[in-house]
Amino acid sequence: QVRLVESGGGLVQAGGSLRLSCTASGRAFRNYSMAWFRRAPGRERERVAEISWTGEVSHADSVKGRFTISRDNAKNMGYLQMDNVKPEDTAVYYCAAQKVGGSWGYWGQGTQVTVSS
Image (cartoon, rainbow, N blue to C red; front, side):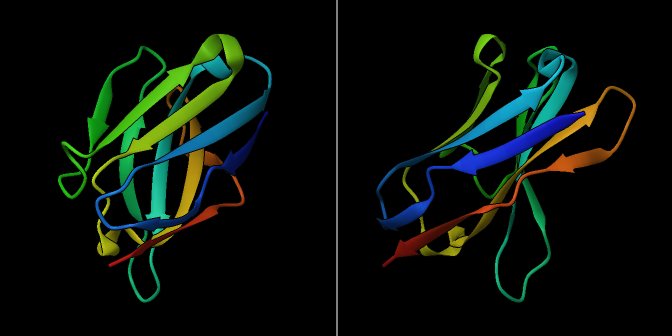
Protein backbone atom coordinates (compact mmCIF):
# COMPACT_ATOMS: atom_id res chain seq x y z
CA GLN A 1 0.00 0.00 0.00
CA VAL A 2 1.31 3.42 -0.98
CA ARG A 3 -0.14 6.79 -0.02
CA LEU A 4 0.73 9.82 -2.10
CA VAL A 5 0.58 13.53 -1.33
CA GLU A 6 1.37 16.21 -3.91
CA SER A 7 2.68 19.69 -3.14
CA GLY A 8 4.26 22.61 -4.93
CA GLY A 9 1.42 23.78 -7.12
CA GLY A 10 0.45 27.42 -7.44
CA LEU A 11 0.25 30.38 -9.76
CA VAL A 12 3.14 31.02 -12.14
CA GLN A 13 3.63 33.30 -15.11
CA ALA A 14 4.13 31.90 -18.59
CA GLY A 15 7.80 31.15 -19.15
CA GLY A 16 8.40 30.55 -15.48
CA SER A 17 9.22 27.40 -13.52
CA LEU A 18 7.62 25.31 -10.83
CA ARG A 19 8.58 22.07 -9.11
CA LEU A 20 5.95 19.63 -7.96
CA SER A 21 6.72 17.11 -5.26
CA CYS A 22 5.07 13.80 -4.45
CA THR A 23 5.61 12.39 -0.98
CA ALA A 24 5.05 8.65 -0.74
CA SER A 25 4.41 6.75 2.45
CA GLY A 26 4.14 3.03 2.86
CA ARG A 27 6.42 0.22 2.05
CA ALA A 28 8.81 -0.35 -0.82
CA PHE A 29 8.14 2.78 -2.87
CA ARG A 30 11.24 1.88 -4.85
CA ASN A 31 9.35 -1.10 -6.29
CA TYR A 32 6.66 1.10 -7.83
CA SER A 33 6.65 3.03 -11.06
CA MET A 34 5.53 6.61 -10.64
CA ALA A 35 3.85 9.07 -12.95
CA TRP A 36 2.41 12.53 -13.13
CA PHE A 37 -0.99 13.03 -14.72
CA ARG A 38 -2.94 16.20 -15.24
CA ARG A 39 -6.54 17.13 -15.93
CA ALA A 40 -7.60 20.49 -17.26
CA PRO A 41 -11.25 21.63 -17.24
CA GLY A 42 -13.13 20.08 -20.14
CA ARG A 43 -10.21 17.91 -21.19
CA GLU A 44 -9.27 14.27 -20.82
CA ARG A 45 -6.78 13.20 -18.20
CA GLU A 46 -3.29 13.18 -19.68
CA ARG A 47 -0.23 11.27 -18.56
CA VAL A 48 2.50 13.91 -18.44
CA ALA A 49 5.53 11.85 -17.47
CA GLU A 50 6.45 8.47 -16.06
CA ILE A 51 9.48 7.01 -14.31
CA SER A 52 9.72 3.27 -13.85
CA TRP A 53 10.99 1.48 -10.79
CA THR A 54 14.23 0.94 -12.73
CA GLY A 55 14.55 4.65 -13.47
CA GLU A 56 13.48 4.72 -17.12
CA VAL A 57 11.67 7.93 -17.96
CA SER A 58 9.23 9.04 -20.60
CA HIS A 59 7.50 12.36 -21.19
CA ALA A 60 4.46 13.33 -23.20
CA ASP A 61 5.19 15.16 -26.44
CA SER A 62 3.33 18.18 -25.10
CA VAL A 63 5.91 18.67 -22.33
CA LYS A 64 9.03 17.11 -23.78
CA GLY A 65 12.01 19.41 -23.37
CA ARG A 66 10.20 21.50 -20.75
CA PHE A 67 9.25 19.10 -17.93
CA THR A 68 11.46 16.55 -16.19
CA ILE A 69 10.34 13.73 -13.94
CA SER A 70 12.65 12.34 -11.27
CA ARG A 71 12.54 10.38 -8.04
CA ASP A 72 14.57 9.91 -4.87
CA ASN A 73 13.82 6.47 -3.48
CA ALA A 74 15.88 7.09 -0.35
CA LYS A 75 13.50 9.94 0.54
CA ASN A 76 10.35 8.30 -0.86
CA MET A 77 9.88 11.33 -3.11
CA GLY A 78 8.95 11.99 -6.71
CA TYR A 79 9.29 15.28 -8.55
CA LEU A 80 8.14 17.07 -11.66
CA GLN A 81 10.31 20.00 -12.68
CA MET A 82 8.27 22.29 -14.91
CA ASP A 83 10.20 24.87 -16.94
CA ASN A 84 9.06 27.32 -19.59
CA VAL A 85 5.46 26.73 -18.58
CA LYS A 86 2.61 27.74 -20.87
CA PRO A 87 -1.01 28.71 -20.16
CA GLU A 88 -2.09 25.37 -21.60
CA ASP A 89 -0.22 23.64 -18.77
CA THR A 90 -2.90 24.90 -16.38
CA ALA A 91 -4.47 21.85 -14.75
CA VAL A 92 -4.74 19.81 -11.59
CA TYR A 93 -1.65 17.62 -11.41
CA TYR A 94 -1.79 14.19 -9.83
CA CYS A 95 0.93 11.84 -8.76
CA ALA A 96 0.23 8.13 -9.25
CA ALA A 97 2.02 4.88 -8.45
CA GLN A 98 1.90 1.52 -10.13
CA LYS A 99 3.10 -1.78 -8.78
CA VAL A 100 5.10 -3.86 -11.25
CA GLY A 101 2.62 -5.59 -13.54
CA GLY A 102 -0.30 -3.65 -12.07
CA SER A 103 -2.36 -0.60 -12.93
CA TRP A 104 -2.14 3.01 -11.73
CA GLY A 105 -3.96 2.13 -8.53
CA TYR A 106 -2.53 4.70 -6.12
CA TRP A 107 -3.30 8.40 -6.46
CA GLY A 108 -2.70 11.61 -4.60
CA GLN A 109 -5.34 14.27 -4.07
CA GLY A 110 -3.92 16.58 -6.74
CA THR A 111 -2.35 20.02 -6.76
CA GLN A 112 -3.52 22.96 -8.85
CA VAL A 113 -1.12 24.60 -11.29
CA THR A 114 -2.26 27.83 -12.93
CA VAL A 115 -0.16 29.53 -15.60
CA SER A 116 -0.98 33.14 -16.37
CA SER A 117 -0.22 34.68 -19.74
